[in-house]
Length: 457
Image 1: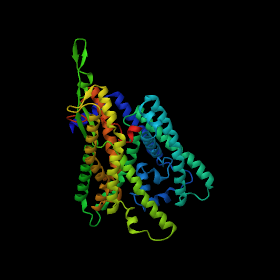
Image 2: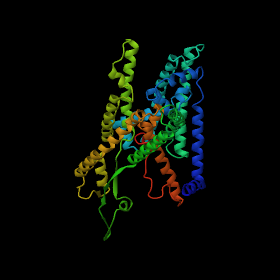
Image 3: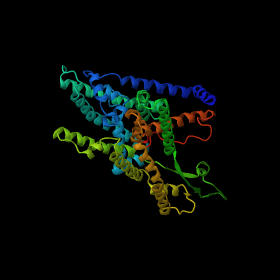
Image 4: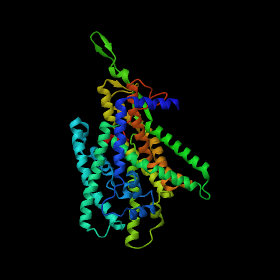
């Protein structure tokens, strides 16, 4: 405990780090205040009642979690940063398929990144207009709009407000990245997720003290289980397979010298989970389709939806979790294949005069790296699949739905990745000032924001 207090004192004693942390907290406070400012003409209590009777695990519940409750509050920040995330994912996927975007990502350096950022911002505006109109239509369908307000004025004014709120959130994220600590956009998402944690904990605590709930002992066991799941997620986020490298000597005058990179790095790290959170996002998007089909069938024909289709709308059902698990495993392999290019890595090693012991440069190195990535992706994909269905196990053991969602899925991976990235940046400041790091032994490994998302932001 004394070491932890000393570390906090060291953090606060570094002026630049103190200013960056304070600046980040102030902007996060502004973001949270915006999530409680209600759109003009909306009756928020009606919308809260409809959310209270809904399922936190469905699409709207997931969006509300990422927006920190702003979606259910019908606030000016209702869409949050999610349109920007969607635009970033689309641009990233276009980089795999469209030559023009590939050129911007790989060859044009800083100018290419500026063009991609500009395209992402324009795409964010377009997505916000579409999602904003859909959200306002949803508010009208729920009866949460004052009937005395003309619909034309309501839609026009609030669409502009929602778009402004999203662009302001994007601006806050960029300012945090530039002048604060951590990846700003990722931190905004994390704060939104954490915002619902206290109410979920209180609800779970109250549930355990009701009849047959199990009491304090069961509640403590759930907290221990949540801690263990988080620690396992940390291991998979940080896990790498170190491929040893050797650097050929080069002639300098009459003697020889080792390449400078040899003393700095003598291995090639291959991530166990190179795909990050993206496979879960894609799989989750597909699993929302049966729910929409079920609602459409029930709404148009009035017939009862089949049991199987209904089970695919319930995240605690067996068929849902089996299909969800398989989709995550498949998407992990697909996204890893898109993200990791063994041929490009082999060419880079050859240019750096480096080679893997026992493996010839060129195609043999590319084949070896491809085989290694394929083998190491298997345990990574299985673990990612298990993380994605952990909320169902938590709910099966008696946890309420809102609390069970913290046991896995997108929210848990984002939380772990963002916290690790922020801690790594803080530790780098401490080490530069010759203070002890945040861990007693070893060092936090370098990360780049939320894997699969943060890197593109």
